[in-house]
Length: 141
Image (cartoon, rainbow, N blue to C red; front, side, top):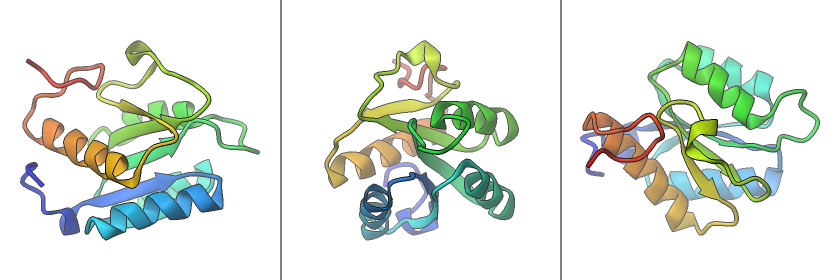
């Protein structure tokens, strides 16, 4: 990975309420050599962030069934409380405009291939590590 962080050192949190989608995303990232934690709820996600200060990326679905808040609300709270965590927001229902996301977050539309997820996480980390991340999540020119 071009970020200077070997994939094995990269800790990622996947927040997804659908067990099959969470398993698929987790598996893809682990297969790429990343250390992955899982959360099905917002409470589990914030607990994981509290307990693992080495987490560098959170991948969250927007639609978290049964939750009073959305993954987007979670992402905004994480951006405020854990600014060192990069975020990849995913959804198959909602298409987000860059201004709707927390600073530095990126969006990936579902469904996506495993390779697209891995590449999106790697590019997000590499761009942020290089100090080249615009507030809307795009790379600086």
